[in-house]
Length: 386
Image (tube, rainbow, N blue to C red; front, top):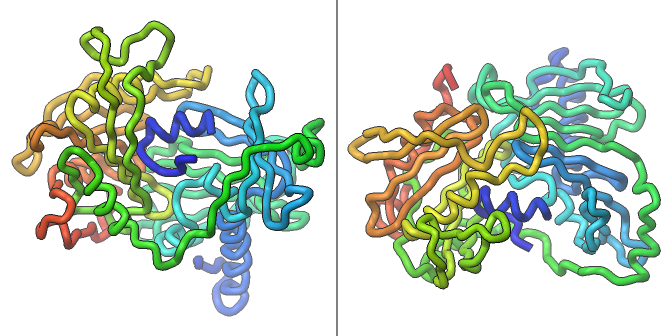
């Protein structure tokens, strides 16, 4: 199961300290309580039951239940209007990866509690305490995470992540404490896919993995030598996909309309500060054209607030000597360069940081392993309009 990668891949997979409010010891104690509860949720995932996830352009539901015969293993199945998909048995640590793509430790390194607890209720009337987290270096801008904790029991029942323009970019919420007629014991007895996976190695080196993947790619691989404040590389993948993939039956993936037999290859990089995400894709120009064409119309949610896969109407911008094609709407910002040894680099952000940051990233690209790209610079995080 691919858990990382570029946004067009994740969309397909989907169809797979806080500041004390009272000061002193009492404030620190309260801060630890909320931070600890959120940390457990982000590290172990949602509790058993039925959970709904809403993103920019899709809504999907999951059943989660403990495996009746395997310790520290959970059964998880996606639900759609076509029924319940085949469940998977996954290690407990893997459950949150179905809902959140950034490591929990990275979130707490860059975000602090800024507001709450405040008495509130969820849509189904569950009485909760609402608590807010914001970027440590910029408490009045950028992204925000809002968490609802049940007043009875203290467990997390809803999480919302919002972009700097206030738009919802992710909501994970419990819609039932059980899985209805879906019986985990019957599912386990009937058999299921078992994902064998070890917990992540604390000493794992994402940069080293990127170098290894880049050595397998059949094209030069670029990385941004500048990263916004708090952002680090958290994941990379090298995908070789069937060239016949299409958004609908009978639609050619080739932008010119003729058949294509050469596989589409993409090396993707995912950067995060623990909440906000920036995806970087590197591919040959022809492959990138196909990928963008497929992504552009990928809207799975029938709602006036749903976002298309990519914004349209590009404009060329000269930034730090590089010609950059930029597209933006209320949901995403996409910047692309095509002047790099036959390859294209596309950066996709969800408007969680200022557009200038995306432009600076794509303007400061260096090949993997180059002396210039070995030492990355980062923003200071103090720009007030962020």
